[in-house]
Length: 354
Ligand SMILES: [Zn+2]
Image 1 (tube, rainbow, N blue to C red):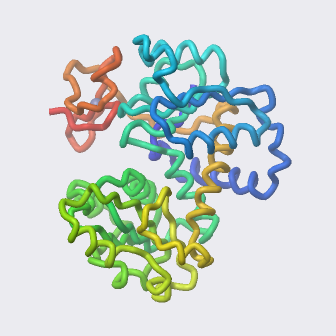
Image 2 (image 1 turned 45 degrees about the vertical axis):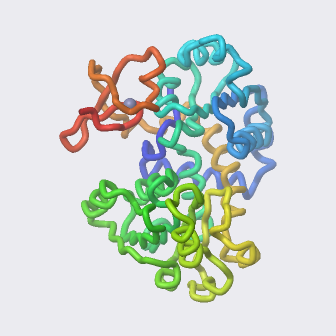
């Protein structure tokens, strides 16, 4: 059984195959209108995410399939104490494929061990959200026609932005990628990821203190949501607004073919006056999310072997993971780990086991 658990399970060929299918669906939607006729998708959302759930629902309906599910676990047997493995075993009897969002890191991997149908991770805590990363990749490919030779600006909250880490990981597969890191004070990329970036020959990066200094060099500007509560005082927040908010005036500094991406929802890091600029691709990006999910559902239902070459070797261990939001803290699962850079990592949440 094949699943979609992490954004970096995919090889370059896998990604290109999915994206090519998504682009064909965009070009010829009627040809796919009955592709999943008679099939059912369950959306199991243990934490709310209306946007993601609607995108999965719309994707399945547009393939001619049906959708069941919940978006509030309190209304289900979970509130009676049912474990995740049991819920997944039961739901697997009813549907052909499951999209699951959960507040515990590693929950999707647990589901994949107990489900008898393909599982798509629709977000597990702040850990992984592979369909967002695939959406970003589809948008870059559709807008710019390539993944190599790109200068990508990452702006805003680089510390807590899950999408940023996943995009960096995804781009490691391509040639001649230059990242420009433009972070709010206190929200810089963590030092481990920076250190990791230095180990790749095909990747380089520079750090800029504001958008104005970076804009002229970028092919892609990836903006992220900056939450006011991340700042320790109001003056830092006001300074950051000045340096990191994208507005129409700053857009005059950007290349003619640069694209602006944002995983949405935005707060005020992109001024609404930018929305009508043809380079503002973030609403097109949101639309692409539906098509990459259609492609993924189709491929998984076909039994597509999406991660065969990249499956990690796990070993059964007895050391407990110390991450308090790891799924192993609350679910009765077999404890698994893997080795990377001579360190032992939790298979579910990727934390280093000490
Ligand atoms: Zn863990």
